[in-house]
Length: 95
Image (cartoon, rainbow, N blue to C red; front, top):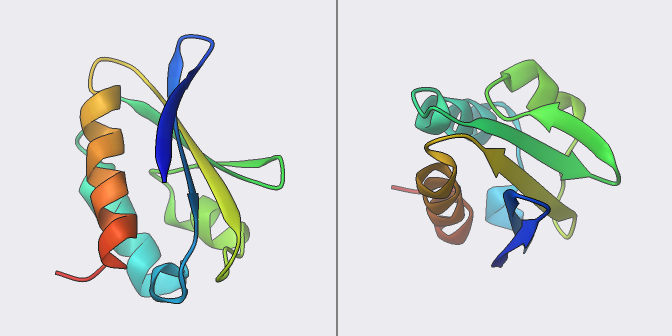
């Protein structure tokens, strides 16, 4: 997992582990975790983009184990939001 800057947006990249596969429960947890941040967050899988604050958008990506995922963030809370997302993916959406 790494964080870089793409233009002026920070980008988190990671490979999805089995525990982090984004079916309904972890997707809902992700949305809940970032909902209140003043940030625009976009999940990108195979060049398909999804709003990280929309459970339907996330589920439509069909993110599975082994998928490579980028998360772009913009806005006042971009760094904080990426830190929370990094923690979620690292923990496999547990605890």
